Image (cartoon, rainbow, N blue to C red; front, side, top):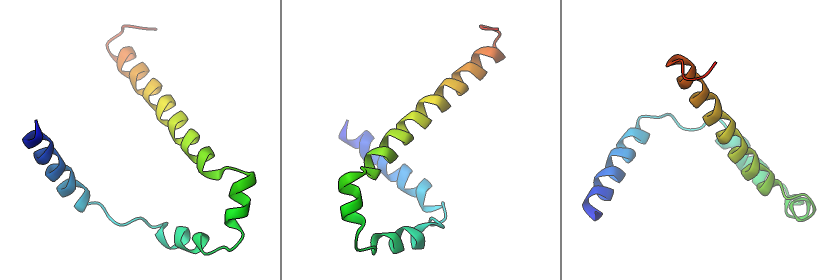
Length: 77
């Protein structure tokens, strides 16, 4: 099983190497330098909001993909 995971990891690393760097890297790095960001995150958990938003977006996207596939094979109306 370890060999399979190593092969999968190397294939995934090669696939990700072809993708460009994030265009938002500079913006994110500049936000990290804001001195009062830690205090803001204490009262408003921005990290938790982003995590919940990403899970919600993945769930909705999965729903639409499955719905489109089922409509294609005429399993649902």
